[in-house]
Image (tube, rainbow, N blue to C red):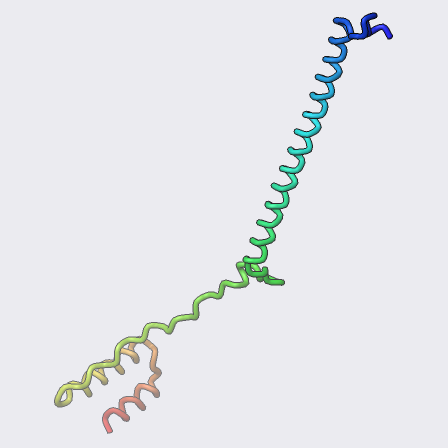
Length: 128
């Protein structure tokens, strides 16, 4: 063996070689241990993330099978009643009410809203 001296102990080169082998082995082992620990840490992190997602999915209400589009959910407001004029005020004492009604009929007749026959019938009804 060339690494051994004649006296039974290794020489300087043998000691250097032995040291290199031990150091290389230690480096390889420590690197493998570090990679193994890193892989375990990543596995644990992934498991925690999966559990958190499952818990969030369990806590959230289930999504409906069908959700109508937003346009279908909108309904236009119901139509409002047209503005109705207030009822006429009660007639004062005497013939002023009859006079105002006759004036209204005459105005409707002059505007062409009432025909001659309709005007005569309404006038006769008021006067009777």
